[in-house]
Each structure stands twice: as structure tokens, then as C-alpha cells.
Length: 313
Image 1 (cartoon, rainbow, N blue to C red):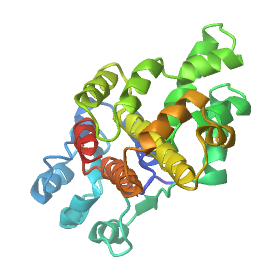
Image 2: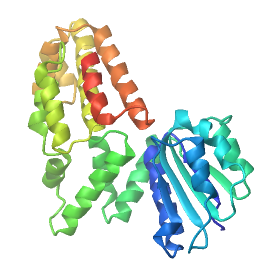
Image 3: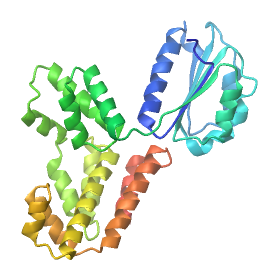
Image 4: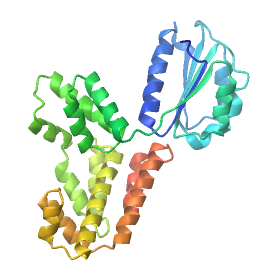
């Protein structure tokens, strides 16, 4: 199959968009004979004139030029559509968009109007398709499907995080260590369980200064802000369920018997449930969901946004 002259990748599954973008660029760049034939554009400073200038340059030593515009915010995509007009045949263009473009997108139409232009959407993986993807990625890394299933249970439904966890386990296994259950539990904990407990313990009824301090410490030590936000949402969801059971008249012991979390975590949630209204917990979950969407769609910096979403809880 002949490579397209313009390839536009977009969709809700940002990890797959960027992964496919990397594969395409590796293939295209392997055909170049010099570094002059490749230009990576900054998505934060791009405008139609800048893109047009990059696209219309002629190759110097190479058979064609490769121009890459990656991680473009979806809201800025359509404003660049006009720059694709009269694209030279000696230019190959890759654009990856952080988010989904609608069927009426001007950039989608501009890409389709070019001979050998192509657009591809990566939809969000859920349920069976997510499990199959994790199993296949584990197999590629030499890990059994059971490990993929355990990683999925311990991680948010974020392909980047699942991939990172699987690669960590593969490296551990390749170093000659056995991947028994104890090792898996220790490795998947991320090494920050004490700090995570401090964070969730200082979350309600309002996040304290300690919550902000611990969250920043976790980010500095390597935890992804979106993973921290996921842990916070799990905590709020647990407290919300405990509150509902408490409102129905269930005792602490009854709640502990009915739920699968550790009894001590349930006890702390039971205590916290008495200090916060259910409506506030639901609002907090909505704020965390909005934060995740804004980060994945390229509208918000993950680290800076974490402080903001904590302030809204």
C-alpha cells in the first residue's frame, strides 16, 4: 500500500493516535537521506502562515520533505485547513490531533480533498476491546495474558498507563526476576502507597494543605497527574457508596462485609462520609472527570490542572 501524502490522525484514544504517529514518522524518515528533509512543528505556536511556509518548501537532498505537526489541540485544527491548499507533491504531512474531529471538520475535509490524503480516527477502547488490546500488548512484551488482566484491574482505563505498567513488568522479568503474585502487587502499587494514603486521608471534607503538598510530591517522584486524579476519583466514589449505605442504616461492620476494599479503608471512608454531603461528592467526581477530558484533549496541562481540580473538590 502506498503511503499517503497527508495523514491526519485524531480521536478520543490519544495514546493510539500518538503511537501510530510515531510509527508513520519512523517509516517516512527511514527513506530520507539527510536531516534537512524532516521538520517538526510546535503545535503551541502554529498558525496557517507558518504551516503553509513549512509545507511549500522544496526538498534539498532528499526525495521528499516530511513535516510533522503532533499533539495539535482539536479546537485549533480547523483554523489550519487553508494551509493544506496547493500542497507540493514533494511534501508528506503528518498531523496528530489531541481529540476527535467531527464529520464537518474543515481540516478533515481539506485532508480528504488532497490526492492520497487520508484521515483515521481512533475511538475510545472499552470493555472487551480494551482487554484485548492489553492482552496483545502484554504478548508483544513477552508477558502472559494473566498479567495484562491484573494490570487492567489495578490501573485506570488509560492505554498510556496500562502500557507503562506492562513495560515496567516486562523489564523486571527480563532482568531475571520472577513475576509472582507478591512481585506484581508490589510493582503495581507504584511504590507510593503511603503517600497515596496521606493524600486520600486529607481529601475530605475539604482538601487540606497537606493534600496539595502530597500531590505535588507524588508528581515530582514520577507519578502521572492523571493517575493521581484517578485515585482521587476512586476515593470519592468509595466514600459516596459508603455514605449511601450509611444513609440506609447499615452499620460499619455491615458495610465492611458488603464491600471488597480493605476494612481499614472502609472505616476511614465511613468516618469521612459523615462530614460531607453526597451532592458535593458527586460534584467532585464530575470535576475530576472534566479534568481528565481537558488533559486528554490537550486543553489543560496535567500537572498545573491537578492543583486546580484539587481546589474544586
